[in-house]
Image (cartoon, rainbow, N blue to C red):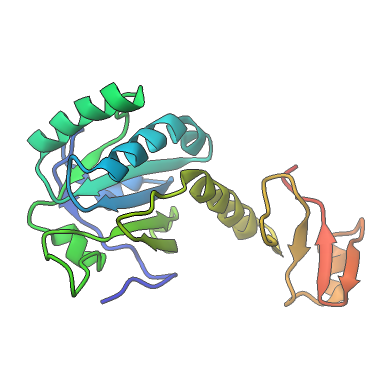
Amino acid sequence: MAIRLGDTAPDFTASSTQGEIRFHEWIGDDWAILFSHPKDFTPVCTTELGAVAKLKPEFAKRGVKVLGLSVDGVADHEGWSRDIEETQGVKLNFPLVADKDRVVAHAYDMIHPEADNTATVRSVFVIDNSKKVRLTLTYPASTGRNFDEILRTVDSLKLTSQHSVATPANWAHGDDVIILATLSDEQAKEKFPEGWRAEKPYLRYVPDPTR
């Protein structure tokens, strides 16, 4: 079955480059990003794993753990890790799960029905500390994922989880945000006593409350 926003992320136990992962236990009280790769030693994914390794401190600052997955085994992952360090200039500093039996891939609906059943689609799942799926993305094999954008969506998800706001198009941390349309003006006055800028009755901007 497809994973929908708000679903509980399927739990699993699997081997990885950093030992056994019991997924829900590993997440703990943090958020997590799970992202899949069709197989080891693929060019686009090599660059992606390097990009995530470089961004890991930014994810960690936000209380977010990162976990990669590929259908090859741990020995292949370790060889691939050396290639990643050599070509991307950074060590693989987060676990890469071995999913040789495709148990996780099937649980997360990562196998494309018309593709080789050994190859996962390139999916991203953002999972919160209640183990709920908050965002899903699926990319074709030819297009590298934009992990700066995934970092931006984490900022939005965390902000909007804590405040009665939404983020507009192309929002970045620190930009103005939008008061939820479900809040009446009276309710908004209680939450935003300093007022707001209204471009339309339903389009009310306030400063980023975390700024």
